[in-house]
Length: 164
Image 1 (cartoon, one colour):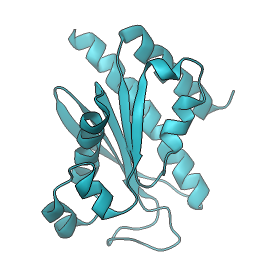
Image 2: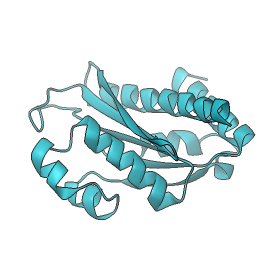
Image 3: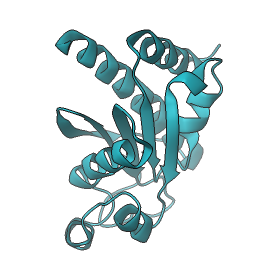
């Protein structure tokens, strides 16, 4: 089992043990986070669904990211990632929402350099985002972003357990 599979398995196990559900909103990773979770037996008990929101119109119309925010900061931004996570939570009827947005390359996007990634997480207590800088080609950046999103999701599940 590789590191990505191991973290995904920990997320599934922790969510199932806690009785929590997850929804995803993925731009940069285009479904890798959901697919990584779905690869784990038992994921159907915690994974509500996901939205691949590659285009800003999907971020706005499906996930409810404010259009003026997207126009002002672009799609690669912490506030956008947080709003995407909140939108995933709502769209999927989940306890937690996780999102990814960033630049995998080969060119910069929205004024952000290749490797810039934001991961958002949302629960009933609010939403937040985390910024990362990854290196390598497209596949490496997307894989690192997926692993980081799963790690943030695991931390979010554990945090909710402590709040109970």
